[in-house]
Image (cartoon, rainbow over all chains, first blue to last red; front, side, top):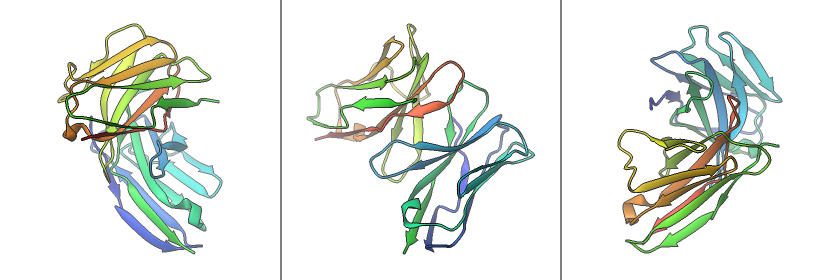
Length: 111
Length: 114
């Protein structure tokens, strides 16, 4: 499958700072998803986006589905140490199809 | 709800042996299950898609005779790594989907081949 361009590759920030990461694709997706993965575990779904332009929040997390349908971003506000992990974006062409993952953004938060 | 389990969580085997990994949807019926492989510090790469009762569809470059997938019921899919070699050492993750809904991931299985 296609691999998405995700940036930044890693971030090292202080507790309380806001974080932003994004994902771009050369092709259009109908669904964008954001996952968090902690060491030795499977990815956990954070936010799912189904419509171009959609802006969705989940607590301190906010994600948007780009208007061109080729990009998405995830913001984390007021980061805390438990936000540490690897964040993956994933695009899906159609419901029921497999996911195409980005390379991940590794987030480290210092107290 | 939507819990997916994998067993074992980790396994060490000798080169040349076969290893079976189970993926179960605990509280829903999964019409489709996906198997991914993840090498250290890399993203998840799809290996194959399996639909209950039919043959799995493998991604390009994944040997179907080496990675045997069986999706015999709506709650269980198995991945068997046959004649495992050290280069097969990886983190194997399954995901399950009910109908056209979202995919839910299992916790992964760490395979180490010595």
